[in-house]
Length: 395
View: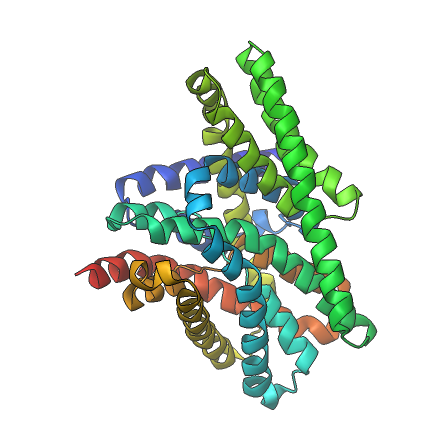
């Protein structure tokens, strides 16, 4: 991707964001992906390619840090039980049920059980992006938006661990060992969170000591990407490390006497960086998606998996609500349906699909194509439907 192409994508993103601000209830990612898909038919953009390494090491840390930094520590404490359950045990149950359903529905094209579970692990992480802002504008109760946002931050890390184990099984024909998986999951997750918390605390103290706004912004960039790569170097989850660092930094700034000044400095940078990263990323996703979608011979299977994924998510969310007495009244069936619909697949799913394409041979081509189709269905259908659904359920 050349410098000129990046500038062109940023310009297109700027125009799209300008239109999006006038249409507050229209999700920006859908608009960007659609434009990118159209650009894929223009020869000039044929050279644009977005690899899994670029997504994982450049885009994800910045986007995850911004989301975590802006997330309310009070909301996290309030909904910790539900968010923690949905993003760990809930994600594993969702992946298992969706994998079994995919295996059954994909019998005609001979999808193996491990392959079906692998596709399910790719489709479990959620990516709210602009959906959260739409929910907050359309609902009087912010609990649904807070849970969707909090869950999406944590389940990214869970999904990477699950995907890695299943990918190893898929490519090497290894048997699944439950306790080995649990041990790896706990060590990778706990190590990532611990690394992020420590790094976030240290950098928060450095920001307090620094009086120059430019230095404070540089420190926030260091923690966003430094915590990620530090955790990865130790074999821990970089995703969870960046999320934990962002939450810790935000919480520590909230205790400072000069909180407003510090936040003004950091917000001034990240409020610009986030839409720039999103614009380039989703436009590039739209451009490269065409290579994986055509030819797509299993369109009806993709639609079936998409529908079943929403039904399974609704079942898991409803079951989770019953586990905690405080949420049986707070989150009724209507809000559970809204939570289910708001579980949109996005950036993390695309990264996992590209990882599968790189790691496996041609036998995985059908799985990658199928996964891309479901992700794009989710991005378009669920994003466009979130506002009218929220207003209809509220009535």
